[in-house]
Image (cartoon, rainbow, N blue to C red; front, top):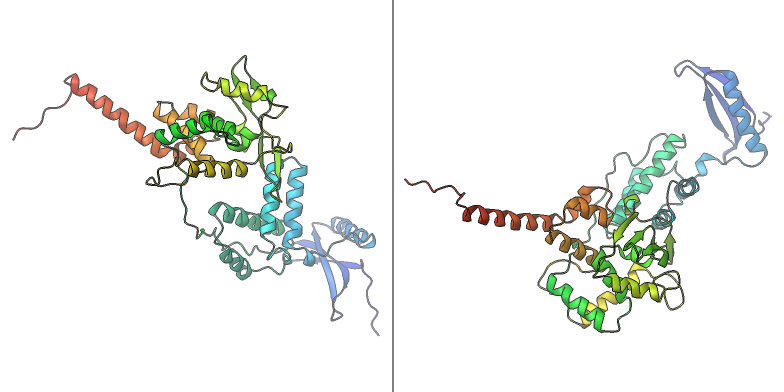
Amino acid sequence: MKKKRANGEGSIYYNEKKRLYIGQVVMGYDENGKIKRKSVSGENKTEVRQRMKQIELQIFNGEFIDESSITIYNLAYQMIIDKYNMNEITQNTYETHLCTLKRLKPIYNTPLQQANETQIRAYLQKHLDYSNSIIKKNYQMLKSTFLEAEKRGIINKSPMINIKTPKSKQRREKVRALTVEEQQKLIEVLQTNDIKYSQQMLLSMLTGLRMGEVNALTDRDINLRFKTISVNKTISRGEKGKAILGDVTKTEAGTRVIPITDEIKPLISDCVKYSDGFLFLTSSGGYVTTNQVNMELQRTLKKYDIIDENINGKVSCHSLRHTYATRCIEGGMSAKILQRLLGHKDIQITMNTYCDAFEQFEAEHIQKVNEYMKKQGLTLKENVS
């Protein structure tokens, strides 16, 4: 009877084609009694022996993980934790990644070596009812996980190589700004009625702050003497929908200082006067989420018949920020100044988001210039045939 080789035993040989020394360590036996081996390579025998010794030691200590058993979840979760521990991602991004990983549950227990293109496509196609942003997050996590698996030698080729980002089946409705008339109505309603989160709504509409940034403000962020607001953190929803405080803003450019105008100073002063650290907290002392404010905003808009239903576009909490930006553009503010106030990383984001407002603003000013030129007699005479 042939003697079975013990786990950790191995051999070294030279591969002429690859011009490398190859070492194979016995990992055990499969259900058919066939030897399972782990291969390592190096430019010389000493290098290969060292790598084999590391594997042998891991086997001896029970620390070695068979690569064939590593699942999508195992590697994706490890990547998230590593990035967070290395301070490559913020608390908010960490929570967002965990939510994304949770959505991959239908396939995340699949061993990386067994995953295939057909399976990945089937998963993505089955979830086209998600928004484009959610689909993109799912796709990017899968793509980066398989790419990392390829880099680590767990798989030879990513099954994502021929798969492009799918498009959502959702009907996309653009978030719009309030008209001047709608804004006037909303301001009056918020100031004359007892409406929950009215101060947050007004602040967002009159400063352009994201609602998560508004809800994260503390009295230390407010400087009434120098009339400034320091925007340096945000509140978002965590893995289980719980509100979490991020120690940074949504983007790096989001960390900024904005002015307190004379129009909003009384509102800010009132918020600070009755604050206990954070300007806005729930009745139980917890953080307020954007979703909570948005639900109250929707009730208010409907109850007081504020929205003109003949105008296309979705109205939400983000509309308050859009409203501020639109009024700034209508007032003649440059895109560069608006970019800084809104905390956009790239001016193209500002231009693309508010292109309609900028185009309308430009058209109005061109018309004013044309009228001025005409009054000065600087127009061309018509050709007389």
